[in-house]
Amino acid sequence: MPATLKPSTKEYTLNTGAKIPAVGLGTWRSVDNNEGYKAVEFALKNGYRHIDDAKLYENEDQVGKAIRNSGIPRSELFVTTKLWNTDHKDVEGALDASLKRLGLDYVDLYLIHWPQNTDSKVDDPSKYEDYVETWKSLQKIYKEGEKVKAIGVANFTINKLEKLLNADGVDVVPAINQVETHPLLNHEKLIDYLKSKNICLTAYSPFGSDKAPVLENKVVKELAQKNGVDPGQLLVSWAVQRGTIVIPKSVNEKRILSNFETFTLPKEDFEALNELEGKEGTKRFNKTPFNIFDE
Image 1: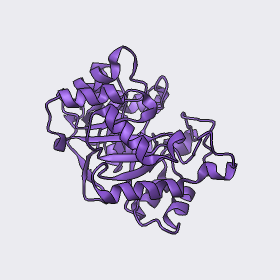
Image 2: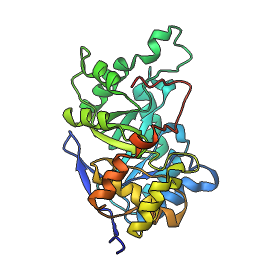
Image 3: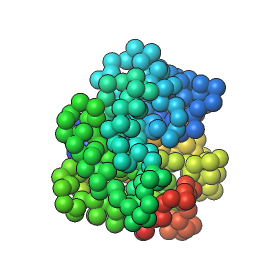
Image 4: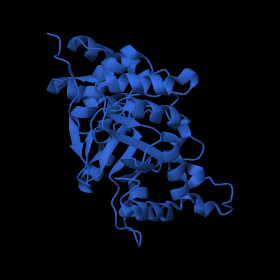
């Protein structure tokens, strides 16, 4: 019997007390031909209230315009953007530039995009990971309460989070850690750690990034067919069911709509996806020259 799909209405509560929709729209690589504007405009018209952006994506102007033109009260939207690696020494300046491009007075969440400072002015390699000082700058802005409503990190491992949380002068716990997450990289240990610290996990690249290879996985396709859903709906629903936030990216209207429809997986199918990494091996699809995962 086909699963009963419904537009996602689930929200999670951050450690700030703010609510974040479980399913959001990712906007990476949505640049050409005004794709960022069109995707966000369409998503907001069809129920999305969570938009994820970043300076790196080079489309904050498009995303912001779509948000402003939507007619949806700002208080009903959750908007994320991110600090890029070259801006660790000028956090507030980078945030102000993002807000200007977005045309917004504040963002709901501001993340350190990677735990690396690649500013060309840094001549000591040991300072490439001086994200503690970066975080202290974010703390200051957050406590002022005007430009950001929550702060967090992305691509942080347990070891890096431990270093951050145990550092002198750090007294704000990240609200979010955003990492690549899917059944071939399920981050069980990281999720357990984050729960112990009251930090939510946001899953990016839930289909495996370029060309969405996880959608083509044999087990994923079989389980999707069994439940009468498409593989993307299966993976988004699995992500939500395990208590994570998920931000599938698409500029295709049909995919934007289908990614927003979720269902509850039968226990055996949910467990089959939980066990997939253990059976087929860990696969990380987002690899960068400036980050080495230490776990």
